[in-house]
Image (cartoon, rainbow, N blue to C red; front, side, top):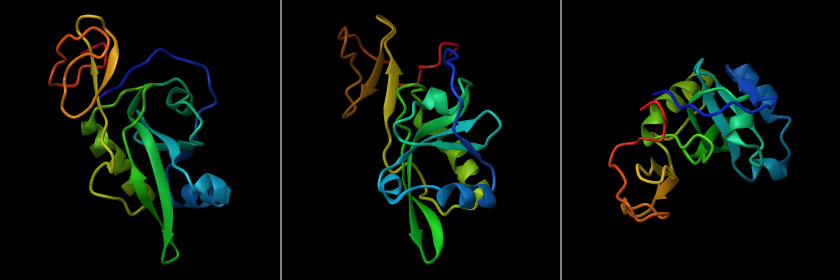
Length: 160
C-alpha cells in the first residue's frame, strides 16, 4: 500500500535502519521523552524514521510518501529495547490498519521485539460526498461532517 500526501518542508525524522542506529538514537532520548510515544513513519524504502511526539508525521517523513505512520513507545526489558505500544494514529497520512505488515518489517529489520499487531488501531475513511477525512469509532461508518455513509474499505489515498 502506498500513502500519499502533499509535500511539505521538513528535515525528517531520524533514519533507523539497524540495531546500531536505534542504539545511538535511544541513548539521546531523555527520560521525559521516553515516557511518551514517538512519532514514526516507514518510508518508501521500508526504513523506520523516528521523531519526537510533537512532530508532524509528514515532517518526520521529509514530506515524502510513506508505507506506514503512527505513534510508537519503547521499553527496556532485560537490557534490551522493545516496542511497548504502536498505533497507526497519523492524521497526516491516515494509514490503513493493513500498513502493519510494513511497520512490522521495519521493526524486525532493526531487531526490536514488537507486538503481533498495532496495540491501538485507528480506522480512517474519506467521505465520498464531502471529501473530509474521518476517524471511524465503534464501527459507525457515517461521516461526522455530512452524515453520509463511509465505505467499508480504506479510501484515504486520493489515487485509490
